[in-house]
Image (cartoon, rainbow, N blue to C red; front, side, top):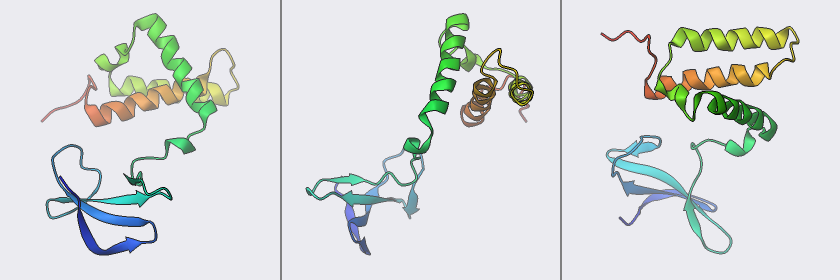
Length: 139
């Protein structure tokens, strides 16, 4: 579908435009049932939808992400790829995160306790978005 320009929404090289909504994740502003995005125009004339609101992964420190990725790798070697996604109790992930934070605070170096804490926190965040806590109470 061809974008419909919204008049009065141009600022320098950024133009807001509307695209009729076709479903999917709602992560943009909507005007009625029309998705509103921002389009960037580059010096060569190419355009792309703006990355605004989609997360700035380039701002996450590589060294921290590498440590967490290694933690996932270690777990996959022991338990299999994505075994953790089969569901876990919420309390177990919180306890693991807190325990590893205290171990890091105590200066223990037997494993990467901060990466382990983040791994548990990522699990909590994942299950909040996708479900999968095995101790969830349903009404």
